[in-house]
Length: 175
Image (tube, rainbow, N blue to C red; front, side):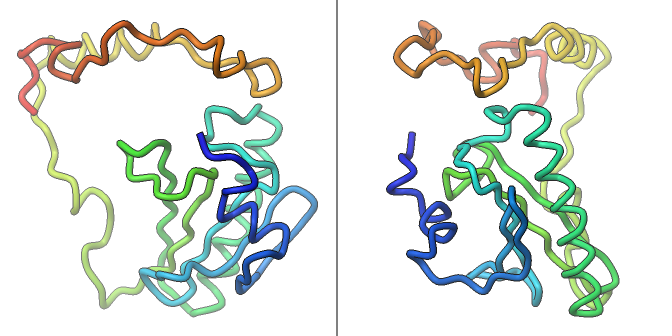
């Protein structure tokens, strides 16, 4: 867990670290990515510190996504792009680099490749039994309480053993 004092994005919000701000309201801030994938690559963050989107309550997440939509449209139109990719990752396993919820709005152009995530990640062939098992696991999975009701980190229950995807679902998955 990263404290607000150590969080790069919290420092940007407080004005301690410079950023090229392009949008701000009472709940969100948007600024250009310092390592842009394309011209206009913009990050949209909540001003309140959350490490992952699952920590946010629905009202906060809704306000954030309203800004994502608005800023995405601004970025796309601002650089006269033909498309827009919106990306968001939660946790290191998903590729999250800064432990503060953020969305990437990346303007896209017809003369570039690959066009999207589907071209980057290889598809995995799963049989009907495997798909049924995954669907049931997702349907029955718990969701967290709103951030204000979440247990303190010391009270969280830790699994006795971290299971890999294959250990959890068996070897019938062809990953």
